[in-house]
Length: 272
Ligand code: DGL
Image 1 (spheres, rainbow, N blue to C red):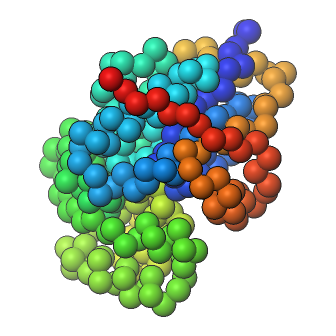
Image 2: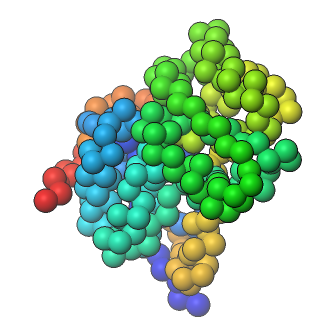
């Protein structure tokens, strides 16, 4: 089987998608990756659907220009609003994080009561409830946006008392609603998993949609016979940002626990 040694492209609004990159790399150690963080335009989660779609289209076009074989939309906001658009327009297959997360939540729920948290744009899009109810129409889904979680995660305050207090405040309605499974519907939330678990209680299953997407990518590559050849040596990951590379490098190295050696500035072209 010859395989396909071209890299997998991943994009996010910034550094948060590294949680998805980490899961992909752990699941697919022979693959090469190109990561684009649109650090000049983060956050996506507070923007209009039209703007998020435009940004996502430009990010995907950049990755296509780099010769990727498949695109992973690590950003939940962009996955919520732009997956179909990119699947229609891109010459490469495109995988988002919403459906994998929804499927995992449906598999995990014991009482049929699922909570979803994400950015304002992700929650307003109702993409997660739609995906969950498309699989299992009888389930109950409660959704809540948690906008302060992104800056708290970027600040590295995973276990800070402020984060504990914010998590308790945001998650109280979901706790009262007795959800038994909670989808972490944002790239940054796995970083705060301990605080979120504490606020929800030990009995609640947390679903990391980025990690679930890694399984989906592996399955898609196998289906398309597009896995890297068995003897392939993965290239060192190329990271691209649209601004503030040194900040990205600092946070990325903390998150990945290793040096980021190939970091470049991307020229993302405006879409027509
Ligand atoms: N990456 C975004 C997401 O997963 C969070 C950060 C942002 O708002 O851009 O929704």
